[in-house]
Image (cartoon, protein in one colour):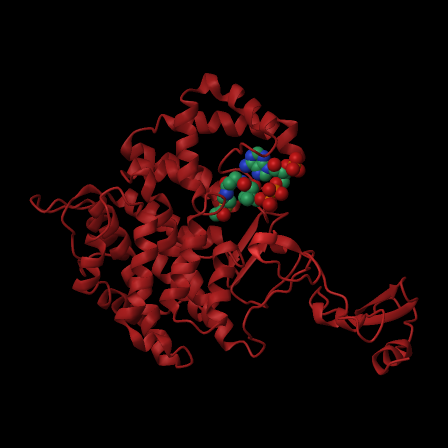
Length: 448
Ligand code: ACO
């Protein structure tokens, strides 16, 4: 018997003791029993490695494609209870933050763990406002894109390009340097996003205006006409956009954020990591869904065609999806969707009712009664109504995901900061289960 085997065989068999924080595992291949500790409702996957059939065995691994049941980190930023529809940032319910805060206050909360007092808030707003301009050469990078380039493609490329303008960003272990990149990223994302939009229209860029709030400034950069004086966005629309920014600011370990952490774990600079996270967000199953919802509503075209569309989705058996429905975590309702739906009404009082709203409401009504959707716990998610508001504000469909990426930047950076300060931090490196051929030998081309 090898040493590892002998050690495993010596592991005492756990006596069943209620209240003990451990898991007893019996390996039926060998008949051996192991006890692994349970902490915070988890076992450590590496504790499984002691479970071997013989000393040469690599040891047991867990197999979890798409991370359905694997926690990759501990975090103190965002809490979600998917069954109860709860979302909290640093302990505060999302509903209270959306009601009472500005996006910049929430960004500060995510990053520093507490809501800012008046002095901290003034400094924070000043620091962000100070960094809203982008380098003129970066503007030239923007100019090189085709007129019909997707705004997300332009945003991803220009955020990545920022790392070449701020080489100090590579110094990720220096807290002061990190803080500076944090200001730059949060401040410059709206500028890049607005420039991408203006470029797609062939319109001159509008530079940031430091007298405006974060959200007002963004709308100003999007819509101000150089010849027209005194553009002031409607306060209801400013508030609506600010609330949307709060709702999108963080969502714990989703696809984009886990990419941020993965790239960050290799100690890449934050611009490269944010570009990677934004690329994940671009996908139609993730942040790209808000764009797809609008396209879907336009394709349906009228309330009378909703039942036929629902039928197509059901017959498509996963091939065709009801975009803006379903969530990996929320299995009851998405609290962000509830807030957005309420806010849509206020926005439409200013802009006029978006005719697509009736189609959306009918889709929701039918889907929530239909066995197919009920059984699979598919409910409207954050993207179902957000696009209708963006459209009412005058933002073109292709730019919707960009509006998601702007506020999510604060969440990405908060998660990246937490990762770099985590004593357990290591480069992310998942394992695989190899099912390919065993060793075989080269065959020259003429003999294949
Ligand atoms: N429409 C129709 N059927 C759906 C939908 C949908 N929107 N979402 C899931 N299903 C079905 C699947 O076909 C599957 O059915 P089956 O059990 O018969 O095979 C079942 O529900 C479970 O679906 P999964 O894909 O396993 O669920 P998962 O948790 O992996 O996916 C996701 C979650 C990607 C959000 C999915 O619900 C989806 O594609 N929704 C539409 C896209 C969307 O709105 N994405 C935005 C999510 S929010 C965000 O990322 C910001």
